[in-house]
Image (cartoon, rainbow, N blue to C red; front, top):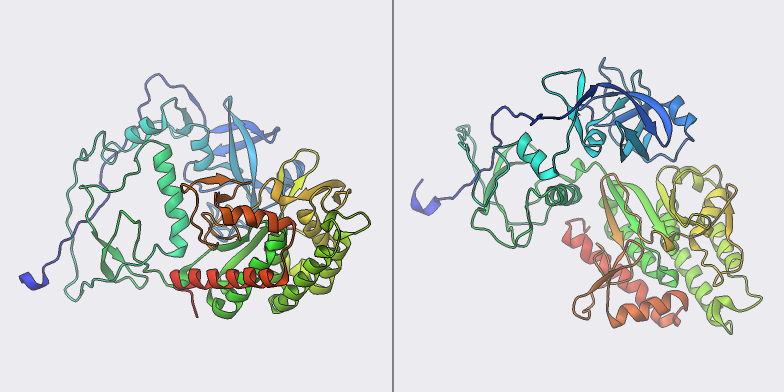
Length: 499
């Protein structure tokens, strides 16, 4: 090329090499193994090629039919048959005297499997020299990476070796330089997970800049064309080349926030007006307390957001008129809330919400959180929504009873549910690290964890906590609704979803 069209390219490639595991002094165990899942004995086949740990329906039923989360892919069995995976749940595992937590998929399978993620969590791997044996390793995470991939894990900065690259491009390929954009929505969550995993294992360390990184890389577009990209590593900005249609799993979660739930309705209104393309790829909605109500409306009857807004204004005015707010003796806050929910939700709301709406509630007995997504009836759905919004004493003296147990506000244990599959876009009226939220200037830029929600320490947030329990006047409520609307428009423009 001439000097005018000169470009600089750096390509990071894998290394063709055989990898081996350090096996010195480590015991072997049979590949067919007996252990426990949630204290129930089970026999499985250890399989490091399986992306899932699989159990059949009958065993799932025998250990209590735990609530299942959805899986949006359908892998095939060894014989090419469909597995018909119903979903997965988190279970306590105990094999070879070791304990770990794992994600267990329920499927139509002839052979129950222990997948590679659970093997790794237990500190196990298959013995490469003996295919029918499992290798128990005591190596640290970093040492295991180094022994498995010696060419890819450097012991010091700039210490990588055996990197030789040969790039062959077709004659008709034209390289193009594109403007920098944010990390694509579908990749952002997965990217953070992988980087965190590498940091936790000690393989990489977070830095602001490095002389070993080049801002130029090659990548494939969705149509297969090769593109040359410039990456701003310091600000973690990547070019978005994936088509929106390629998004496989996107969720939406609304934080618990009391009367500031009007912010959520503003956000939902903006999504309906200018984010229809984004809503079309949303797989699941989640929420706690007032956030669960917003999630329920948006997922089952979005055309009634305006009606829901008017009800919120009316309920807030009703509470303001009480001498001591919602805790005024003789005033039944939960009855008023139930009336509004029943008037807004459609008759088949529970069918629309099935495995699509996840509501955060807290057990009064164990204080543990539960995400409910299966509803036998419309009344069951309303009960769970009321449970998620019940604050003891403030909203009455009786916790909501559901399936023989008593439950209270989900905000006490998980005020902002993040679903395990895909990326969850988070919405909160409190300024913090959420995707959609107000942007305050805090005191010393200090964040604190509020039941799994990162909140900025700022004067405005302190005022918002007060407004969540004691609703402000109508003018302030309208401004909070508008703030939710405007903050969501900013997010849609930033993520290239605005219409």
